[in-house]
Length: 442
Image (cartoon, rainbow, N blue to C red; front, side, top):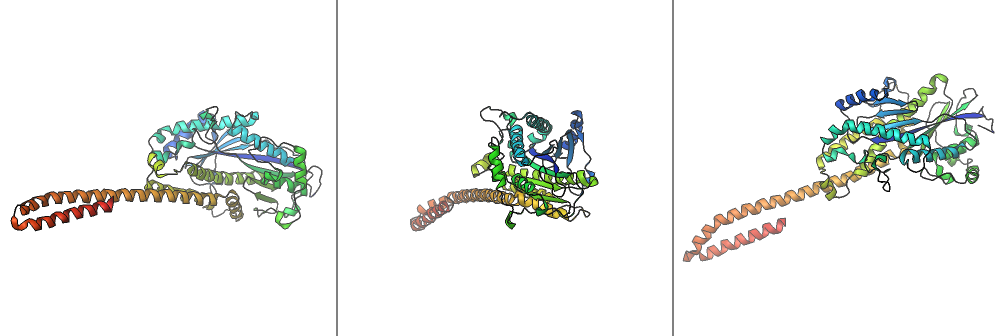
């Protein structure tokens, strides 16, 4: 790192990789994936070979090279993840401040490009939306054939999260967030042995902490700018690095790499060998793509779940469809926690646990399931109540028929001097029975 020479860390290279998920409005079947495979080359989007990642990726995932820095992953559940790789550069001592500014620029440019964005990120956002529109147009026929429950089209190019109400531009909508992976590689040094938190130069550790939690220097991805840079540097200088509690957890078992994770980002630090370098980073990209596809799946479902029985009826939800949806959700989430490959290194388990924990996917999933269960049970109760009332109506109808049949008997008894008392008793029984049936169901 600039200004320090610790374990050869006089210089480093920083690469930032951004993940932007979106939904095309439907699950993708074999016919639709065939259409996509036919149309993507026509737009100069080359399909990628994912064979070497087959043990990590769920079945049916497709990937395409959109441009030199843009890759697209398409999942059968209808979630797509754009992966954008920024140009690698040599950072300065307080590079995390610049990186936070770049994250702010990326969020603004990709999600809300009308807010004076940095040009390259605005182009990224436009490119992602162009692909989104292309995929949605291919899926339109399949979407129209679906029930309103299954469509979930609210997140596909309509008034969804990044939609600008003032400009009334739905074409800007459809995207929700940008997730960033930071790759920090020391240069000009021999590969080192065991890389622990305390082996990393102090200034580098401060930068890593800021990347993991920008709030340490009063920044968020939604901030307008970094503001007072000198003030931010002073805040960084005061970051506590001496206590045991200040140490960040390393989720990577290999000695020459360290991986730190938080809610806001993932930071990979170290020096893989030349043979491992690209493959290592690509593995992290694949794992993050899978995680983001499922995180966005839950996010979409949570945001579009009806909050009342009336809304559920209006959108034609059924309890049976919701139970099927829960089954599919559990199956999709297994992608994040289980891999079929028997030759995968054991370190993948630690990395996966770290991604699940830091992203809070399990917490978000449990919350959605509770919400969905409440809606489903309310719908079931409403259905049972309506069935009960229908059953009551049927009993009243049968009672009326019985009354009409009994009326002739009562009438004949009433005309008989000796049967007047019997007729009165029979009439009383009929009235009491009708009142009891009415009280039971209404």
